[in-house]
Image 1 (spheres, rainbow, N blue to C red):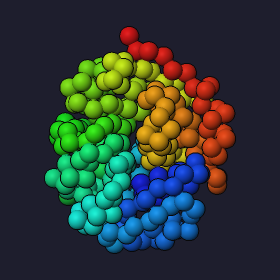
Image 2: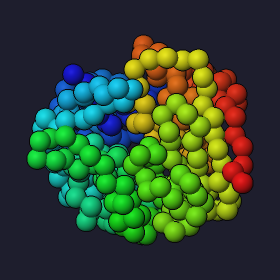
Image 3: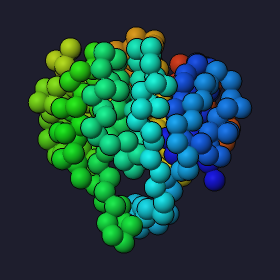
Image 4: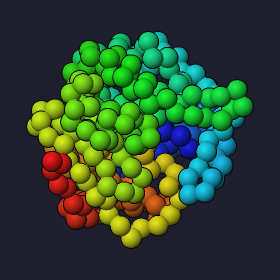
Length: 267
C-alpha cells in the first residue's frame, strides 16, 4: 500500500505542477513517485515505516508495525546545493542530531510529527509535544525555519499563544487542528492569524497533513506568498484531498478556491 510523507508530499507537488527532489527509502512508494512528472526521486534507505491505524471513537490510534531508517550521510549528499527543503518524517527515521547539518543555510519547513511520536513497547504510538523545543533549537543554523504540525503535537502554549510560542522557539509556527480553524504565527510580521478552512468536503482524513505541508512549502518558499495566505492555499489543498480521487486537486482549483478561506488577525 502506498503512503507516508514521501507519497503524499510528492504527489501533491506533482498536482501543483512543480519540480522537486524527493529523498526517501527504496519502496513501492519510491517506485510510484519515479513515474510522476517533475519529481526527482533519490533513494537513501530501504523499506517503509508502517503503522496499523485503529479507529477510536471520532479519532484514531497508530500502532507501529515496522520502522525504517534513512542514511543521514546519503540524505545530506542528496540535498547538497539545494537552498530549500521540507523535512517530514513518519517516525524518527532520522536522528535529531543530524538536523543542524541538514538545515544549515537553507529555508526549511519541518513537520513535527516524526519527531514527537514515541512508540511504547506494545507498539502503540503516543505523542511527546515537548520535543518541539528540542527540534526548534536544532534549526538555528537555518536561514529561515517554520514548524508545522497538528495541535496535539505542539505544547499547549503554541496554540493558546502562537506568537509567544513562535518567539520563544525562534521559528514561525503553523498549528493545524484537523478541519477546524487553526493558527499561524509570523515573527517577521509580529502577528498571529486564525485561518478557517473550507467546509463542505467530507472524506477520510489520511495524508492531509503531508499534503498541507507540501503546498504550504511551495507557495511560501517558491511563490513568495505571505505565511497566512500560503497556509490558506495549503488548507484548501488538504480539504480537496478529502474527495479521495485523483487528481486530489489542480493548481487552478487551489488558486480559485483559496481566496474563499477566511483569514483574521489573532488578538
